[in-house]
Each structure stands twice: as structure tokens, then as C-alpha cells.
Length: 334
Image 1 (cartoon, rainbow, N blue to C red):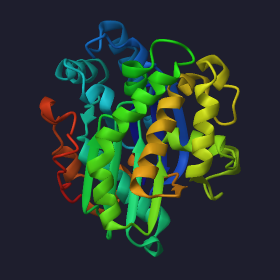
Image 2 (cartoon, helix red, strand yellow):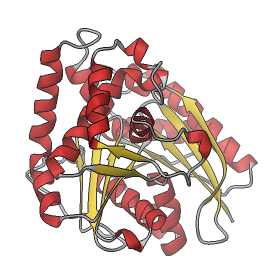
Image 3 (tube, one colour):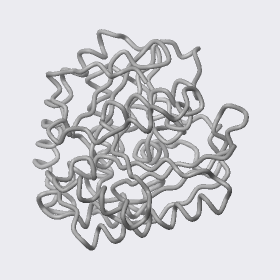
């Protein structure tokens, strides 16, 4: 059986096609189409006509690609940039009308839970009590658990793109005071979640997402071309040094550093600040980079439970797009 996932993110629309006969998603084909949605959204977060055309075109092309490679209809979902858009309902309706694809919007907690499931399956039970961090363009997902599903999972408005737009859009490179203010804001958002993580005392701390993969490379990890089985880590001390390098360079020059891609160079400093602050507050010295994340989590849950759960997903209420740290909500077990 061949399955696929289409992921609409802040920068790209990604397609992952996998064979699943053996009970695990074995990659067959991946593709990404740049839409740079974060740069096209309006000041209030609305997704305008031009941005919508790009998204619809990329989703349609990804669907054709998936079906052409023998996949069933892809599971298509959007991350925080669509979840938080004031005109989210209109966007979802327009994509469906223009492409025939029903784009789901996962709640932040569900996204964190699916990512946790993927990390647990990749890393195995030997990791014990597991913490998973995932930095996206619009949000940071944090999940901790001792079993297959997290004991708690939260989504915080600490995405690398969101913070860059909100705090670092002035000077390039940013002034030292702007970096300090951003770190202070991140620390304030994270403190309650960090206290819970310290109390839980995870045995293993893992990181997923493109942001952490690039930061790992910047800290000396093996390049992606060496494959997913090459061990990769993000050391807190190395990440602190990386922040100093990123902060002193304009965005255009950051792309020359190992692992930092040009499209993400502008938000790399904010991503590094979130990662380092989380590690420091949670008492984590080292993160293990996990190549599986939410896309693999979707496929794994389908393999384990069937597709009924996916059909029941509806857009989360608009007011729940940002989850206050003082109201930690237990994730609904996948």
C-alpha cells in the first residue's frame, strides 16, 4: 500500500510518499514547492488572493504527483500559519474548490501528539520518558510522555518566523537589545512548560523539524546527505555559540553557514534562541535529532488505527490558535 502526506507550511508545501506494507512509512518520494507563505500574508495574518493562488497551485501539483506515483488520496494538512489566519475558513474552502483536496488544520496539541508518536516509533522504547520539541514557522510544540502517546502536549506561539516578524524586523543584523528582548519574551512564554518538564525529568530529549536539523548541522552534525540513520545532536553549549555567530551576521550572510538555507536564514536566529532558551529552562544539555515528525506521525496513526480519526478532524476554534502557557491542556490521546 502506498500513502502520502501533503504539508502546507510557512515556506513550502511538502509532499511525502511512502510504502507502508511493512507497517512503517518507508520513503519512496519527497518533493517541496516553495510558496513563502510567511512573506505573503497580510499584516493581520490574513492570507490574501496571491498567497492563496500559490498554495492552491502547490497543493494541486503535490496531489497529482502523489497519485501519479501510485498513492491513495494524500492526507493534506496545514500548520500554524493557516491555523492562525483570521480568514482560515475561507482559505480551506477555496483550496477545496480549486484542488478537490480537503485541507485539514490540526490543533497545536494534536500536531504535538502526532510528532511525539513519530519520535517514539523512531527512537524506540529504550529512550524511556521522552520529551519532544518541534519548532515550526508559527509555533513551538512540546510533548512529554512515558508511553505511546504524550502525557501532556502544548503548542506555544514561539515559531521562528512569527518571532522574527514580531521582534527582529528592524535592523539587520538585529541590535543586541532586540535579541535580549526576544530572549526575555521567549523565556516568559516557556517558564511554566519548562517547570513541568523539569518535574517530569525526561530520560531522553528529542528534536524534530527543519529548524532543529539546520541548527544541528550548524553545531557540527553530519549533513543530511549522509542519511537519516546518521546520529545527530544539538548540544546546548554549541547552540549558544551558534547564536553569537547568527546574531552578528545579516540574514544574507547567515545562508553561507553550514546547514542554514537561504529561505530560512532570516529566521534562523529566532529559531536558535527558542531552542537554546527551552533547553536551558528545561535543564537539557543535549537534544537528539529525530528525522520523523508530524508527517510520519499521520501515516503511523493511520496504520495503527485506520482513517476514521482523520475524517473527524475539523478546524480548531479560532481562539485556541495560541495556547497560554499557564493553561497547560492535556492532549487528547491519539
